[in-house]
Length: 228
Image 1 (cartoon, rainbow, N blue to C red):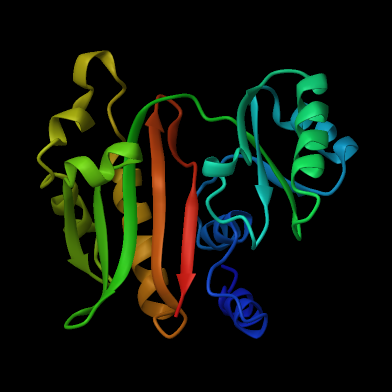
Image 2 (cartoon, one colour):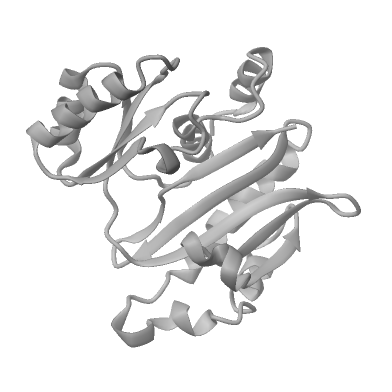
């Protein structure tokens, strides 16, 4: 397994307080968490090649340290189904954000819809790194249906936590939705808790929100890591 400390050291040396999304997903991939096929590209040709390789539809996201709330400024475009749409989106990004320092554009295979969950970590003043799990997506703030465990957690503790959320019925295949693979979900919780614990000198907080559960498995669609 790849050591992520080199990534955190580089971010620190660049005086940045957060990883960009593609960097956060690289960290997750390094600890064995499956992420959707994606690539950071620099040209429209690379964007089209990547989209053709991954298969349509794809999502495109602008990666810049100066654009952290991408959705708010139209720096995320979903459901792109053709080469022309990919090309036009790339050109549009370059035109609208010409005065911004751009690291590249993330082209990512679009994940099918499903149940949106959240897994995150932060630093508790008393207990140190803690991990949370619950209902995610845009409803996370409204519903606030999350449970906490101290880091690092065990798989047994993670499985218990999964069954403690109020909306646990949603995990069982509610109204025809596919059942959530609790075993895989628990593995992700354990891996993230170990990452937070082992890198507690670097990481302030992490969010995978949403992590989408569908018939194909569990997929982190967005990921954020904030440095100390």
